[in-house]
Length: 393
Image 1: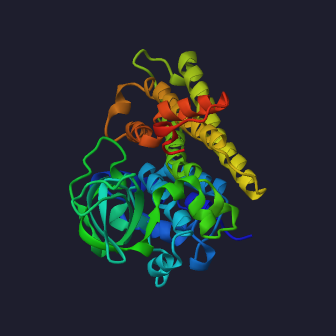
Image 2 (image 1 turned 30 degrees about the vertical axis):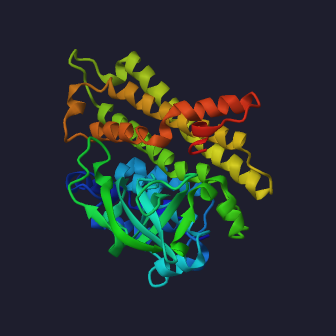
Image 3 (image 1 turned 90 degrees about the vertical axis):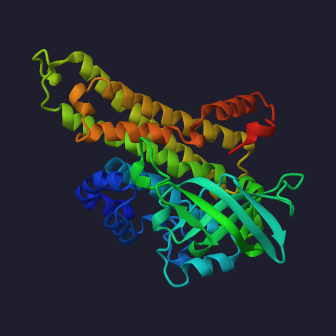
C-alpha cells in the first residue's frame, strides 16, 4: 500500500510544529514548510490524476488537513483553502489545467472567491479590475481564482447580476505586502490582491452560480464522484477541517502545558477535579466535531457515488453540520484555555497561538451560522429557501 499524505505529515510532526512559530513571525508559511507540503503532495490530494493528482476521497483530504492544522495551524489552513482549488479546476476548461500544471504538477493556485472585482466584456474575454482581501498562502502560489461580477463599460453591474470565477497567472495580479496584520492565523499570509486592467480570456473563467449549483461539473462531463461533489460541501470542508484541527492542536498543547503544572494555591492540576472535568468535556466536544464533519462528507460522497441527487435540503443540512461542528470545537477550546492560568498567555507558549488561530478560523464567512441554520430549518419544513438564504449552500 502506498504511503498516504497524512503519513508524511505524521512522520514530520516535530519539524512542522517547530516551523509554526516562525511562520507567525514572518507572516507567511516558511519555505521549508512549503517544500515539505509539496514533497508530500498535500495540495495534490484533490488534483486530477492526469495532472499528477492523487484524487483521494474527500474524507482523507479532511483528515490530512486536520492533522496538519493540529501541528501548524497556518499550514493546515493553507492546505484546506489552496487544496480545494484543484477540485474545481478539474471541471474548468481543459486548457486551464494544462496551462497551470503542464510543467510542474506542484503549482499552487490561490483565491478568494468574493466577487470584489468587475469583469467588463472584451473581445473573446474580459478586462478585469478589482481588489480582494484574504488570499491565503498567496506568496507561494503562481495562479489565482478571483470572484467577479460582470459589468458594462462604465463599471456598472450587468443585470441580472452574473458572477464569474476568473483564473489568472501570477503576472496578472499584484500581492499587497504588509496587508496581513491580524491577531490569528498570521502565518497564512492571507494578503490583499489587486488586479488592474488584466485581460482574461473567456476560457479562463467559470460561471460562479453553475459551480455552486453543480451544473458546471455536469456540463464538463465529470463522472468521478469526487468531482461531482457539491461545491458547498467541498469548499467549506478544507476551512472547517482546518479549524477543527486547530482545536485538536489546542487540546494537545493544553494537556502538555497542564501535565506537570501546579496552581498558585499549590494544587497539582491533575488533582483539580474541576479542571479535569473541563478537559474531559472539551475532548469529547472536539472529537464530536471531528466525527460530525467526517460523517457528513461520507454521507454526501456516498449519495453522489450511488448516482443520487444531492438536494438543496441535503446541502443545507450539510452546511448546518459543518458550521455547528466548528463552533462546538472552538467553544471547547475556550473552556480549557480559560482554565490554563496566566502563564498560558505568554507569547512563548503555543496555547495562546492556537486559541487566537481557532477564533480567527471561526470568523470566516462560511462559519456564520445564521443563514445556514435558517435555510436548513426551512428545508426541514419542506419550504424552499430563497434569495440570500441560498448563499454558499
